[in-house]
Length: 61
Image 1 (cartoon, rainbow, N blue to C red):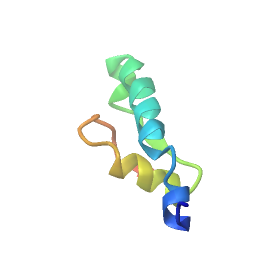
Image 2 (image 1 turned 90 degrees about the vertical axis):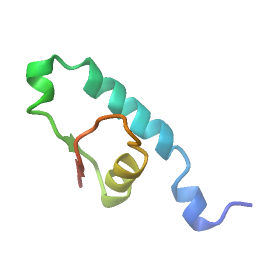
Image 3 (image 1 turned 30 degrees about the vertical axis):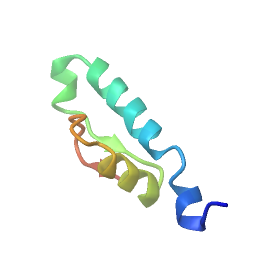
Image 4 (image 1 turned 120 degrees about the horizontal axis):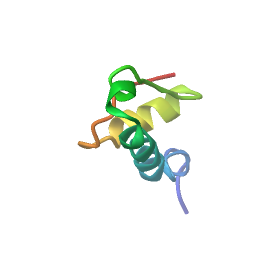
C-alpha cells in the first residue's frame, strides 16, 4: 500500500511531461513570454521536480 506522500505524487511525472509538450508546441515568440501557472504548490513542485531537462520555466502556484 502506498503512503500518503506516495499517493500524492502519483501522476507527477506525467503531469510534467504534458506541460512540457504544450510548452514545446508554443511558437518560439510565445514560449519566451510563457510561464507555468499551477493550481497549487504540490503541482508546481511536481512540474519543477520532474522537469528533468524538459526545458520548462519555473512553475508558479
